[in-house]
Length: 331
Image (cartoon, rainbow, N blue to C red; front, side, top):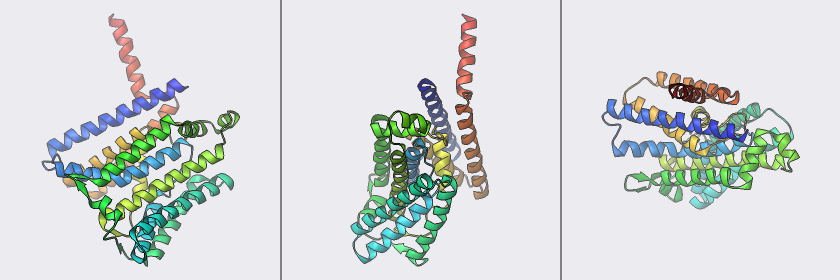
C-alpha cells in the first residue's frame, strides 16, 4: 500500500513538473515580455499568498479535513488586521487577525467533527459568513495598510525577489517537513487514509483532524495578511474565487481529496504552474472568459487524475509498464 502511494505521488510530481516546464518554455517563446526577470518575480509574488493557502490546504486534506472557507478567511483576516492596526499598532493587528483565523479553524473543526456536519457544506457556509464579516468590519470599504511588518513583507524586495516569496518558501519547507518528518505529519496521513485503522493503532483521530483545520485556517489568515500588505489596502472582496485555484493546484500536485495522500512540493508546483499559465494568458491577451474556462477544465482534469490514481490506473504508470514490456520484448 505504501509503495502504491509513493508511486502515485511520484507520478503526480512528474505530471506537474512537466506541465510547469512546458508552460514556461511556450510562453517565453510566444510572449516577448514573459521571460523577463521582472515578470518572473511578479509570478513569484502573485504565487506567494496562494501558495501559503495551498500549504495549509494540503496539510488539512492529508488529514481528511476539507476546508472551502480559505478565501473568506483570508479576506476576513486582512480586514480585521487592518482595522485593528489602524486603531492600535500594526503588530497588534497581525496578532488579532491571526487569532481570528485560528478561531475559524476551531469552529470548522467543531462543526464537522463534533456535530458531524458535512465538511463541504459547513466550510462553504462558513466562507459566506466570513465574507460578510469582512464587509461589516471594514464598513464595506478598503482599509489602508501603509506601515509596519505587513507592508515590509508584502512590498519589500531583495534585488528583484519580493520578501513574500521567501515567506512562501519558508512556509512550504516547514509544511513539507511537518508532513514527512514528524509524528504529527505521519498521524495526519494515517487518519486521512483510514481513520478507523489509525484509531486502532492508538492515534487520537479527532485532535489530529482539529490540527488539520487549524493549519488550513492559519495559512489562509497568513495569506490574507500577505495580500493586504502587498496591495497596501485590505478589501472585503480580497481573494474572491481563489478556492478554485488553490484546490486545482493541490489536486494537480498529487494530494488526494479523500485524504491520506499529500505532497507540499506538488502543491507548490501546482500553484506555480497555474500562476504561470494565468500570467502567460494575460500577457498573450487571451480573454478572461477563456481563462476561467481553462481553470475549470484543469480542476476537472485534476479530480479525474486523483480518481485514476485511487483506482490504481495511473496513466503514467501504465505508460511506464508498456515501455518496459516493449523493452523486454526487444531484448
